[in-house]
Length: 228
Image (cartoon, rainbow, N blue to C red):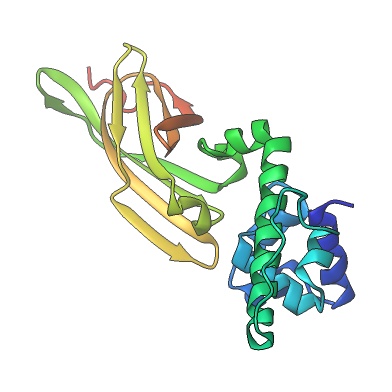
């Protein structure tokens, strides 16, 4: 049984939903869902909190029967210090366990160092063009508004969002969100891009650790019909 399956088993044993467990630990429902799907590993402090909530030792939760063989034997200390030493050993065992898990799942963890798949986070989006075109630097352009709602604000802690327009003529225009609002439905981001009045497409991009992923939101023809 994996760590995620054990978390799910004990959560259900306590009659908690993923949301309920997340509220007790101070994390989102999506974070609990990723733990149970073995898509992420809880931090050490969350593992300790889970073990206390489930009434288990950290060893029982992680299924670590013995500390690693290379671990030096603990030095005998006064009785009043032994509980402190016990927790040190449990934390060290947890770190060793997580290190081994990371080695076994290196490709998966490496993938998570980059941006998430945009399709997994976008719940809705909108695209609106201004009702008129105008001349700018000798060409006809249109102001284009784009907005999206993303499912989980936790994802944005280390990920930047941007918008990109690509015209049929090969021009690329980028813009950072100018508005960001959090609500019960997620995080809303929007921006205004000035684009050539011709066919093109609009994309949303996620940037994490210098790596980018793009998702096409919409493709369009000439935005404002010619007045001729």
